[in-house]
Image (tube, rainbow, N blue to C red; front, side):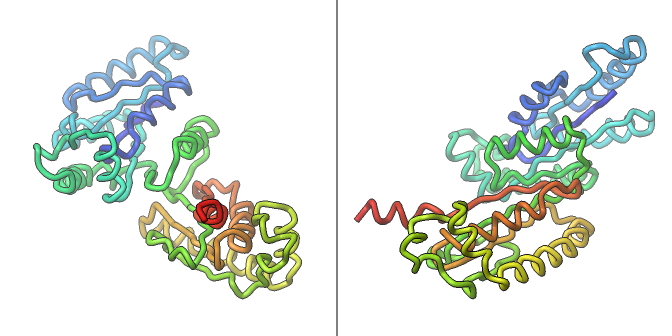
Length: 296
């Protein structure tokens, strides 16, 4: 028996999450009014008791601003008092990302009341405070693609990995294109020899074996990587303890094509496989030199 409350900020990916859970065999209901949640849960438990192997073995209920968030606290507290177990899966995103998504889809924010999207987002954060504080999982989708979200859903609800509400983004970049504004930790790997100045490596990237072997042929690269992984593994449980749910680790070189890409890939491989956090990798500037050359 599994009951999941899927909630979070409007525009953070709730509808997509419900579709993915449906593909995993969950019976999904979206926008169920708050007063009906407790009644449905009771029906759910009764159905399970009568038919343990039935189609209602796994249920996900979508809850958002349309549901009546202010009135949701009591039904959830009543469920807990009755011993009905449930999980809260909370989807979040940065305000700037949410505004952009609403503008791109030309949809009105449900709490904007015809006014500014930013005001609706601020009000929704207030109303969602209780759910966020009591969430089983918090997933920040600010920098996720649909495939990244799907992987996290599968890891948690298909592979049963137990993440500590922290999602790591490993990001390579080029300093000449600017430091990523959302980076929490920034590391400069320009102390390593630059493959750009080797003719046979110039047009390859850090994802190619030729560049990888060159960069990792230097002892300094291995020492840097070892110390970096040790530090991040030390930081992760402390960030989780402080309630941080998104950590962007940016690794930069001059153009974001060779050294930073190679070391970002190495770091991603070294940190992957843990159940303490989710992880993704992105190479922001890997193709920019090529694009600029074509435009000339």
